[in-house]
Amino acid sequence: MESKEERRRLNSVIRKIYEGLLASGDLTAEDLEDGETLRSKVLSLLDGPEIQFSIDHRDKLLPNAEQFANEGSFELALMFYATYYEHTINGIIGTTVHRLDLSANVTKGMLRTVNLEGKLTWVLEVLGLPIFNANYLKTIKKVSEARNAFIHYKWQPTPGDIKSSSEHKLGELAVDASKAANYFKKFEARCLFKGNKGRLHRAIKS
Image (cartoon, rainbow, N blue to C red; front, side, top):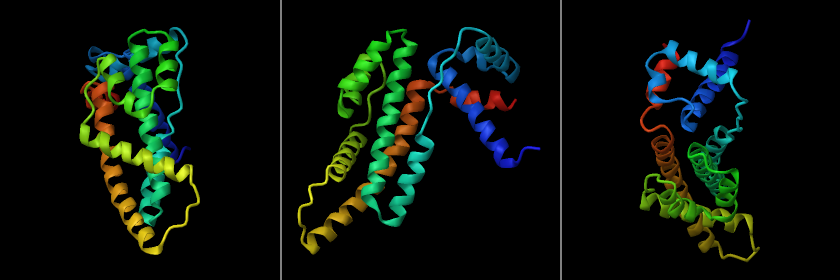
């Protein structure tokens, strides 16, 4: 007999599969009328051409970011927040390009050659997606810069008082980084689910 934890993990995987099908456009708003209609459509999709799935690592990124922030390891926290931002916008872009039936080369080009700021500004406009909040964009740029400074550490001597001030600023930035991550979740839902994520979850349970 499966444990509660095993059941929870299984339900989480099933939910993500359904969410992925909705985000990609394989499921539509009409398919969310009730649980029976939804399951019938998903079964027909699974019986059709092979469906490809991607592994989502973000379930590990945010908990790690929050844990390191609580421990006062702000550089590590910001590294995980910055990685979360990049994974999320890359997912939004990749899913939208697939939904628009553009070639895989378009996705590769955007993800490999465009920096984070470009992905959160002009790429969104090109793909017909909503505008990203300017204040949160500023926070994300600061987090990305702090992450890069940590990863490419230069081993420069720092006086104690400057170091203390720097750690305080990193702590404040970690708080803002968490708020930006919460905004990013809502932005992703707006881009990919168009207000239908709640309807999907209700239909899964019915």
